[in-house]
Image (cartoon, rainbow, N blue to C red):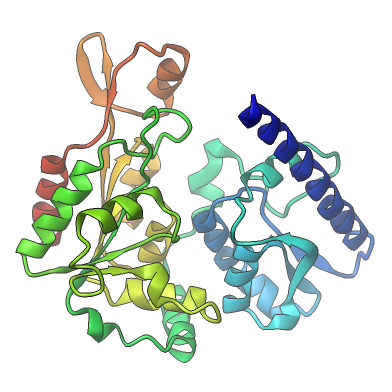
Length: 335
């Protein structure tokens, strides 16, 4: 009962929060001499792609600006552009809150017109831009100016991340993992190979608490926590610095892959679901390992089509990637 009341109160809060931001955006659109670039999808990695895709248009047109209503997106834009090019609404969502609910409400309002209306079926053609050396060089130049972290203190390290939840493998996120043991096995595997581990993610990540409890004596010695290393003044620059100086990424299909893509570094993505776009040559540095679904006693890759079957039939079996399959991918693609 209390949880239901809490949920309803939060829903009301985010409705009015979104309404205030929506009104501000509508007023901004009244000035036809200025164009504001913003995106109607809440993923951190998605917004990095969006603003990089529009970098030239925003930077070199005096009438074009970034529009943000979350601190996380402001952080992305302030890293890429001069401050005068970034307009943040009043009452922007702070880092401690997820923008998911806010974005969901905003998309319901009439005349909410983001620069790119993300069409799922056209994701590859118009959204995920080809990887250019100019983008890699841009990221490197900017982070080297701003980030003060000396990554040599971490030794030779791998960036590791897990979207962990003890709930269903399909809901609420198809990219989550329930098997925490495999992250322990991966850490043990890397340590035996004389590789240190950088654990990616915010301080409240569920998997981080499990790892810290499991390896208390190795924290800050062989196992490092990224959220402890980055500065609030240069979050984006420090993140890119840590990613760029790692050997590779291994983890859930999540935002860090975007920066590994643009930095042209290798990565292993596990517990993803199959999309044809992942077979594109531009993802040649990545190895995707997919969850499996049981259809008529055959285990096949979970994809956009059979995902709908699993959503409508809770008895359908879905299994995530095994530790062994991840290690095989590491050996085949990263040695």
